[in-house]
Image 1 (cartoon, rainbow, N blue to C red):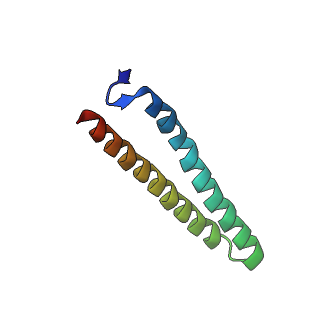
Image 2 (cartoon, one colour):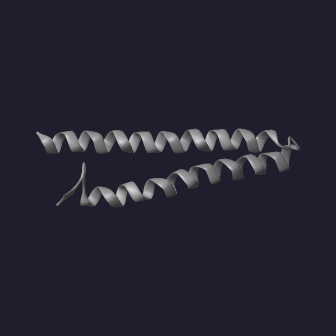
Image 3 (tube, rainbow, N blue to C red):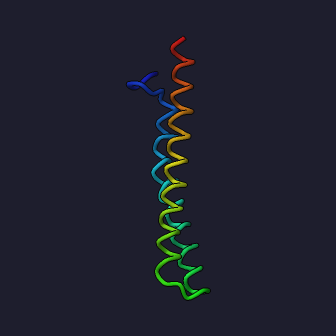
Length: 77
């Protein structure tokens, strides 16, 4: 059964994207914080970690959106 532009099984994938994004940012912040404590570079490591985590999270979301779009176009053929 289809719900709008997505199939029912796609909703499970879509609902996990927020969590994957949050985990990527949290890992970036954690890594940056650890680097700051080791090197004494407060707050630069944390700021870089936030940016890297955000970029990684966006990469994950965009990659999954493209995969879902490709799967949707295959279904419409």
